[in-house]
Length: 130
Image 1 (tube, rainbow, N blue to C red):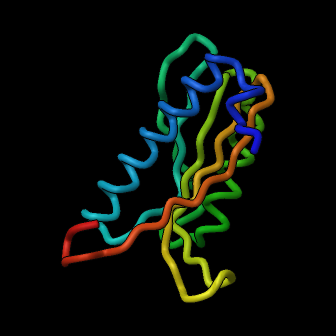
Image 2: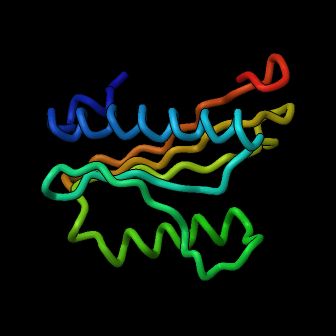
């Protein structure tokens, strides 16, 4: 089986690994503190600065997950010249592949062409813990 790493540059691999770690750490903290989270992201600017990304605050107090994720897609697309790599994370429920499962869906993309979509399942074993 071919790995995505076979075609990705070392910098794209490093960015993907770092962004995945960042968004999963933030998602974990938000899940423990709040029980869920609105979609958010992280990106490396062209100069290498790590920045966190949130949806459009103009969406109001209770936007849907799809609205927030859509605003993140639009925002990163409008600012694509500023970023070398991005990761967007969403708290999702999968019912397609069998019993309901919750997970963090992560979309990773590097300007050199590497793009991945990952689903990292999670469960709550005890109150307040993942």
